[in-house]
Length: 597
Ligand code: ASP
Image 1 (cartoon, rainbow, N blue to C red):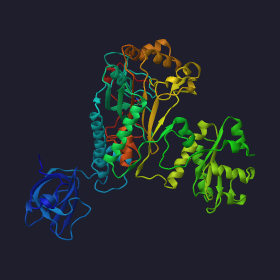
Image 2 (image 1 turned 90 degrees about the horizontal axis):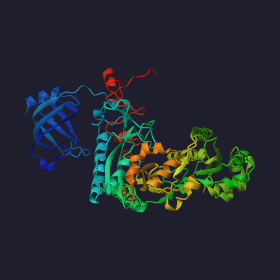
Image 3 (image 1 turned 90 degrees about the vertical axis):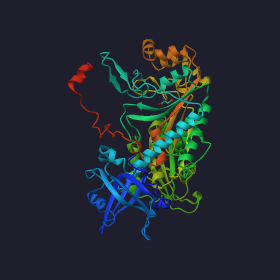
Image 4 (image 1 turned 180 degrees about the horizontal axis):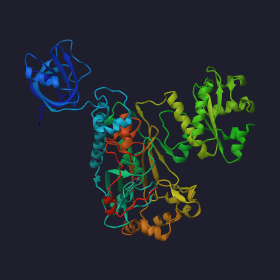
């Protein structure tokens, strides 16, 4: 090794020890003859001192050293003179008096500060990600990710799970998102696909008798990227044989609670995780991944709204819609501008509009509310009783603001979800030190596509219906509940999974219901159906997202902050400049002619 210690491990007990260190110049300060260099390596920072009297040669070298130069120094650990200790540094009691120093490599001036926590434009950070990774925040995130992944591996290893690698070049089969395709050179005109997830492969591992499988699996989905989506993401992919839903939920609850208590013991996690049916969680929070750190529950106001003279309500109800709302605590004094902002959010989310009802000033009970206290464009169409009843349903107090949306459920839920998040954000209701996990279960199996009119699997077509719902496959597929489940936390979906079909006939039936023809089924899924005919065990699994899990543990807002080399929002790798054109020759080998668009 080029060094004897890392920069962060030196303490008072090392005083008098001869050490050799190597790292980057974090900062250089000249102090009338003396030069101080804060030397940084992955572990941390230590102050080194170059003295012209004792080591003139080393000092000469230090004069050449600039920020981010790579240097190696040898010297002796000394107590810092009284009054110069640095309590913010783990090594702040000592310094290294340099005897010899050499420059291992120089550095151009970096395009941004590495030694200061300042706001830097993200694209610049991504272009120079190797420099960004030297910054403490990114370094901590990457180290945290390592600890999380190691914890999960150890956890599953201790419970008999086997880590199996699965192929990256597979067959293109519909799994929900668009595939990334890889042209074959050897088979002209044919393509591999990159796995959207190892779903089918892990099921085949169960047919293969592995019983308990896991993998840190890379998944590729050619979707438009959003804040918490990337073209490639990592899942802790898990599959088990001879299990029921309950076994998988328990395993995951244990995994996540022990992960949080080990990795971020300062954070609060509540066990057992609450459980919601899909229907219940949608009713109460208008989302299947609500942030449960705060209440702000949605109230159904349809009955009382139907008795009013307000035609926006009554028309919506006559059209089969509903009227729902929530209370924004203490926001009864919102200005026109603030109300307009909320209305804009509602319109942007696709609903027709927002009705606000201001419940006057705080103080006193709802019974003491007078009609003159109420401010709303609908005030003249509502009686005081009706307003009080709506307020009660929303669990509102005097001084609150009712936010009400009317329309079809699929129209108003996104609006109510946005309002709930917005109010929580404005009122800072979400405790940053709490992880509010929950399970969502009993999802419908299918939804009818508005475009094609076909039934589509809500999770994926390999999910087993609840046994008691199997007859409904023939009569009302929309009512079939699947044995699938999600884990949610603080407003994010962290994992999805299901008990799988292991019977070829049932699997074929599901594909048919989804509109696949016999030939397509054989062509796309024949390998699965055939495998099921050879003694497939009952099995099920789940796949927690690693990027999101680490993002939450790190307290970051996007998964890009916890991925070493992420893509941009427009799916570009700025460090390498990918995607990029390739040569004519490469295209020819792949039998590809590019078409002018
Ligand atoms: N393969 C599924 C997914 O990626 C997860 C699972 O069912 O295990 O969503």
